Length: 456
DNA sequence: TTAGGGTTAG
Image (tube, rainbow, N blue to C red; front, top):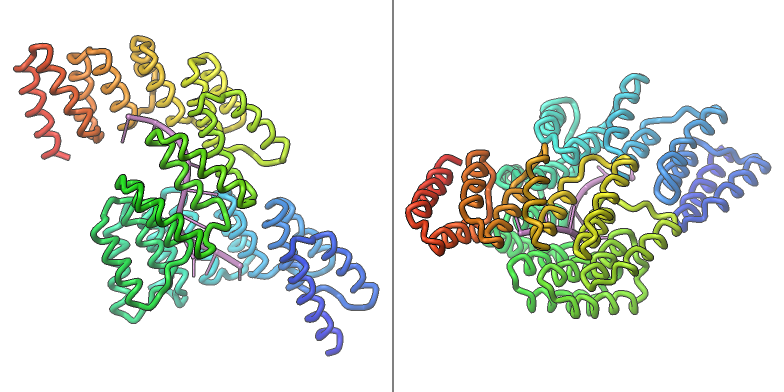
């Protein structure tokens, strides 16, 4: 009894030390405890697994399992769930799903937490149908869904383009007594904003306030991004100032949202001012903040500074992601260094990143902008994977080069593939054909566009 | 111990 009580105290100490990221100290306390006859149990090790995963690496967390077994302690469901969720958090989604299979093979019965994480992973890797099957298993099976089950489902549906389904699930759940949390509303508002369903987003936001909820930093960032998407810059900036007065700008989220929006519309000076505010507020930059800063440098024509920062990030031990590399490739193109851009794309391949369509689209666009339209055309022909961006970029650049007949031909083949091309680009082709005297072709193109709209 | 906001291309 005394030992069990002491272990409980030990676990409280370890949890508190781990929370403050002092893992070495936690290890020392455990060793001291053993010396005094207080032995760690499964809870102690589970706390360590979580802390190592969060503050060191997934592998470091996973290796705690071996130490547990050496100490004669059998990992339990919490150990497994902790690892599965850590893998999911770090985007090792297939690893997370493998761990789930491992649980089943070891004869451990998963609980609703395990299933929630699996659903989350399936949504994240773009398999909404499979996630939905897991959801149905939970709802119709022996488990009682937790609020997180519904939140994962609503968010996953939104992220995979099924906002209407998310909305009907939300309403159905409400009819059955489900009380949405701030988190549920945030996920739904974000999904609606991304789908440009501003009217519905506004009414959900109204309902959120009527429930007596106060918007948090996440609600604010979501609504702010929505303002920028609708070109309501002043409103967006006002939200940033309000966030600051409420103490919600404690991390880089809000700043990065604003800076990215300003960069996109060419308001580079203002973007620079916001970055300076972020730095003077002492916010420790994470990878996304660094990516945003590199992007700003590239847009300012400071490619040398961007590459220097890239080096610094790697020296700091941060691993650059596909965004970092894509921004650099785009930066190299904007500086006219297409050879360097291609080399960096190849370098990405050697690092194990998959095919990067966004980067290739950037190269395509920048070639067009620099007047190398024939080069862009041959790159386009060589591309095995294309999307709506690829077609829009090339059609747009063909118009820029006043090659309206080629643009029209490409636009028609794009419509046949079912890709949605920007209305403004379609208009540019129609107007271009008229401007060079091809009125009949312009009329034919218009009717083909109408037909495609009807069919798709 | 799960789940919600930020960064790349038209």
